[in-house]
Every structure is written in structure tokens, then in C-alpha cells.
Amino acid sequence: MSEKRMAIIASKGTLDWAYPPLVLASTAAALGYETKIFCTFYGLELLRKKLRLKVSPVGNPALPMPFPMPTLLQSLPGMQALMTAAMKRKIRNKGVASIEELRSLCLESGVELIGCQMTIDLFDYRRNDLIEGITYAGAASFLEFAGAAQIQLSF
Image (tube, rainbow, N blue to C red; front, top):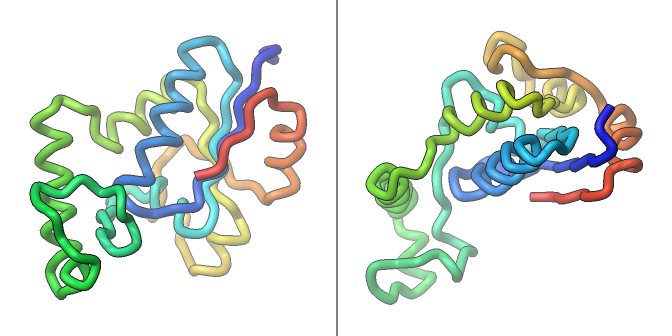
């Protein structure tokens, strides 16, 4: 067991919110931290075999836009698909690792990816919907680890 521990809760299921827990976890693992990500509620989407992550422009005033856009326009039909495509293009053009690559890196680095069993039951996930190599556990199991972690983060 490592002296250094990082506990992360991932509760968001959008493309932009998928990056922080995976980037920080893979970096922490590279620095020798024992690291676990507890994916609960919408964060369970990060563990799907077939990712369906999108960017939601609504309610995200810090989202960089190529031109100023009022919030009302951001809620128009098709804006989510447009913003998701733009973000994916930017990620690819800047050479940023994909979510699939970051997940693999986390698993290869020893990061424990935990699917919240309550959320799996609540939203009727099937285990074959989720990637191989993850752990299934409840909040109590994760909190036992998180309580002893030097760094606790929630996204």
C-alpha cells in the first residue's frame, strides 16, 4: 500500500467533465499515489464500453466559444451536437489524449476505477455495458479508502 493516496469522485457524465478525474488520476498514479476513482450517478458514463459523452453548452459560462453567444442561443436544438463536435475536433487537433486512451492509461497505471453498485442498480446498467478491469463497490467501501487519502477530489 502506498503512503500517498488520492480519492476522486466522478459524478458528471459529459465530455468536458470526464477529463479532470482521468488526467489527475493518471498523473497521480505516475507520481506514486495509490489512486481510486469512484464513478457514481452520471459519472458512471465514463466507464461505458461505448462512450456517449457530449458537451453541454447550457449552464457553462466558461465554455470557450469562437464568438460571444448568449445563453438562450446555446439552448437551441443542435447546439449540444455542434459544441460536442467542436470540442472533439479541438481535442484531436491539439493532440490531447481521448477519454478511451486516458481510461486505459489509468488502468495500466494501477488506478482503480470503481463503478458505484447503487447507481448501476438504479439506472439498470448491465455489467457488459461497462469496460473490463473495473471494480464494483458501494459508497462505504470507497469512503474507507477516501478517509485515509491525503487528497480527495470531486468532479
